[in-house]
Length: 617
Image 1 (cartoon, rainbow, N blue to C red):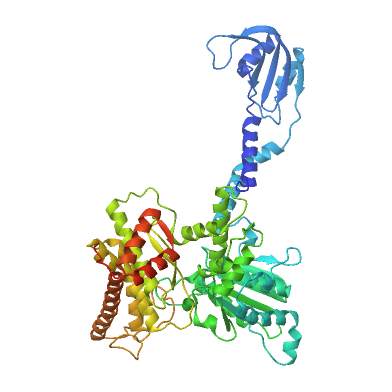
Image 2: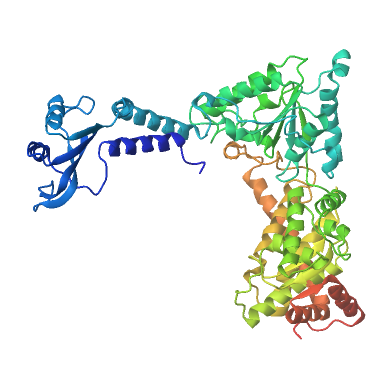
């Protein structure tokens, strides 16, 4: 119901009233004015009720009278007729004639308001239509005078922010950086007396879902000050200058409520580099950005207002926005490590009925590169899995099913796989599993599956060991495991399939980075052939200068090929050497579709004790 405009409804009701006020709807037949006068002259009328421009005529008895719109007379005692005179000033001669004929006359009191509304109705409709179109154009339901006002939502004493640093798991370094901001808002005089200036702007940088907005709310909750939050896209409108006006009102409100915090989410939508190519030229965005720059630089040293903003694209922000004096402090909110993931999982599991089999440490190891939002989604999906089968508690199997669903997708039970294809998939996944089990330093194998999920026909799951520095040997071992599936197809199936497409993509990208960035190629061992400046904005990469010549590019390709060829040859050697384990693991997959890493490691240990067999057997 909130979508209906009350003004339009009111105008519609008034219009219907005016239409039917002078055109009453009823069952009484209508006679023309001449017939009415004749009936009065003949003395056949008993009473007349005058109402505006109409009259209700009651005869002394029911009679046949010619009525409007009928070919034959109609027998009735009550009729209606339309008067020829102005409703506001009835015909005096008619009144006299009625009185002379002994007719009882009654007249309804006349009001001037219907006539005024009838005369001004077109103007009211035009104003209402213009008001409705103007409100739709500005994209809001507030009044016309609020068009250039700030859309920021304010949290204060009435709706206090209750989030604190205790509600944020992990990110200890980021929280230490933000404690200074909280202390400044609580005790600003301590910094002013010693001549220190707190950063005017704090930019929270990190991948999506890592908790940038949560940390900003925690700062507001810890400092217990007014908190203004707004998305940067809410400054933008179809009219140039509206965004700048909203920025001005936002900063004015914050100054009045100081000490306060302004939080601008996704600031890259208006803070892009000016003149950066595609998408760089936009009058409204540039005016809004200029106004933000002006307002941030206009703060005096004693103003206790701090600007916080969040983005996952710091590379595209305008340099003027990042210079000292504006957003002069950047706090990186990175993906959580294993210990932080464990703490985040415990936060989201607090109110969940968990079984004693749930191992949070193992879950944290099984979720590398998961953000805080991903971990919350994992716990929720596990709860849904348990509820789906009417469990009273969430156990470890629910978390495993939820993890498979998130990483690989839903089970594709409708996919038709032939026996030969199923055998090829089983040996492909066995190749990954066996090479991972026998390669020193490879990630620990957790389980292997040939159940189709999403676009994957099978998968091997690992418990990766997090490292800050990765050696060349470890990278080469990862390439061997990645190419083990294709090597197994060639050795045990006798032909190769398209199942290794994703393996080739990942291994080629890794080998290219080894050559271009990490100096691990045979030809280029002590130089980086590309500069890594983070994600590149569309438009800038078109104008990037090429870092090396065509001859060097050819040498890079040769280095990449040598790295991949060595890894593939080693993978082929391993699956051939452990042919007994390959057959046992593939048979187990064809029977159970899902096996644990212990089954693979046991098969490898057994193959080491036995002499190697012919791979084709």
